[in-house]
Length: 225
Image (tube, rainbow, N blue to C red; front, top):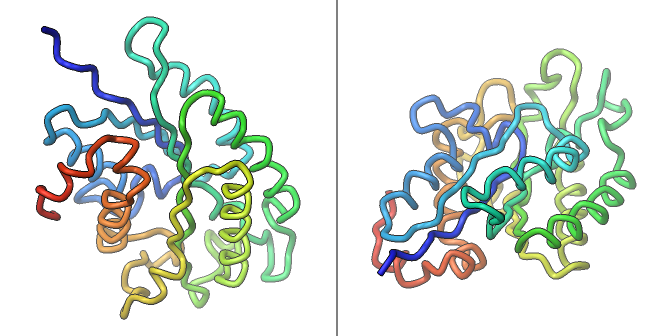
């Protein structure tokens, strides 16, 4: 009897998904991919993070990139995890400049993207991580602040509730951790290895993701690492 075909999860997002800032372990998404590889029948994970991407670029990539990860003929991935939005919060040129994507455009884009993604496969969405405001501007041109990050994470949650998509908040849980500022790179926006490790542990034990993967029991028996 042939072994069951493991489910496939496509993770779409920006440099956080890509793993920038974690040269030793490759980021939270790579850590999750390696962890699942150790589990019998664990899901196959495709990391489709691209540095600098915002919501509009992720939406443009979605159909072709997800459609190309089926492995077997006429198959598509069985799940989509979206982790995007931090780049959209940035103000351009000055602390009170225009957003890369304004809040109304961000919410409208989500209202278009989420149903489109849900028509392909079950969807899950991650929240946003905080920034170090004193390190701004990033690349001498982009200004990030945590009040705006909070607003955009709220829009993410609102859009997910509208279409009944699981959402995992990150901002407040990170800010509640003592010494969270040490989890960011000197540039003030990218997580370092410690930050990626924290996100990895939170994502790998997310009930919605475990249910999708059929790993509730396996995770209870697997030590964190």
